[in-house]
Image (tube, rainbow, N blue to C red; front, side):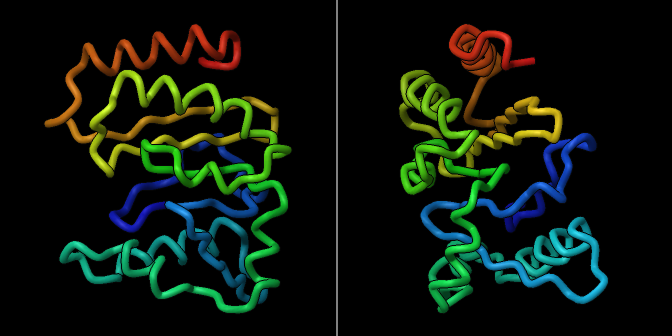
Length: 168
């Protein structure tokens, strides 16, 4: 979920398995209300992010406000997050534990993106989601005025070759 209103990456995504996500180097702390489903909790968090100022701040402001101060709050997000968002430079994933199930796939994807898109817009996002069926779903969100269709086709082809049967 990102502050400009992007939605979950697919209907088949099991949000109950989503323990956390990262944007740049900062995790967001999510507080679940009593009797609230995980889906509602995440949608409420997304809505809160959308309400942040839009004049060039948005999530930049949120990450510098440090939405949590207690180290134990951060620790809960270091336990195998199964959904991760990152800007195209891949900096967020450098902070992730190498044992995370999604990390090997990210390690393959990021060099491909760096090679094909060396000057990627900061709002080019890679979304990697590990489903309950252990199916990995990868989404690439980009500005249409920056990336032409042939570049995106090259990116998809390179990912398919690198990840083999993992990419649908």
